Image (tube, rainbow, N blue to C red; front, side, top):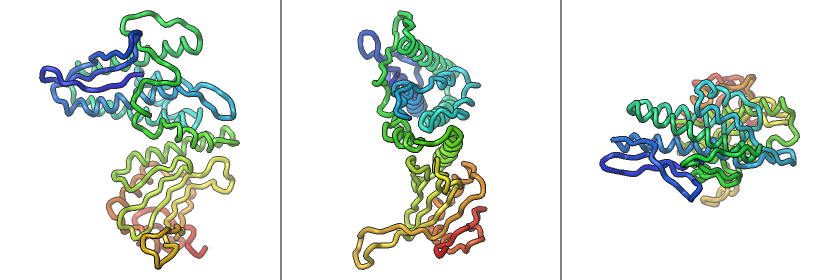
Length: 329
């Protein structure tokens, strides 16, 4: 319910909190820093936290053809460090738990950003998070339970459906498109299947966040990471989690494919991807295993061409991932 920014004033950089008050939009100073370079990462992560906390409370849960509310349990993590662990254990829905995962990471990033600032700045930021959590909780109680909000000076206003945050928090996670994609994955699945898919999404999203380069992107609609390094001679890699509710897709799958031109005589024409080999994994991989694989590709993009020649039964060079299907299988 708050947007953060910076303002230079008398040789210092002020971190400002801007929110909707009773008389319109209001800005107040959270704290000041002598070095503007220290303020930038703090402001960035505060905006992420504000959006990740506010947006799930400002939209309806429309799964299963009903209208419901998303949980508010994540608010506790703003003020209670022990509650952060709960952000990684929920089973409510793919989208909500994905947002909780991102909030957990944002809070960790805030810790890093505050590690080198003076103690008064850390105290001021903690007080700001407490104010954000308290006033959002009170506004939510008034909206959902009819409990009147206490009238205090500088009261921050929250409006369901119109969260006062940076656009989507600057993250795809909070967009309507991603929410609807993940909701569609849940259609017709059991609670147990949902719980497993949430765990798989956490692994994929965590691995993706640990990639050092920009060669990969996360396909939310397919629970997949797709990587296509530059200068890979047309080769690409997909790392896919089991699809929810799909009995034929119960295992993680790493595939290496290659783009083949539809018309070899046409320059820069269309192409179709063909799978060269697959590694069907016997157990779920860890986030670090996936991240290491992708970072290895970032350093050596020609590895895909070498791996594509791996015979069935052998592991991809430098990894423990064993090829289970070749192109002729």
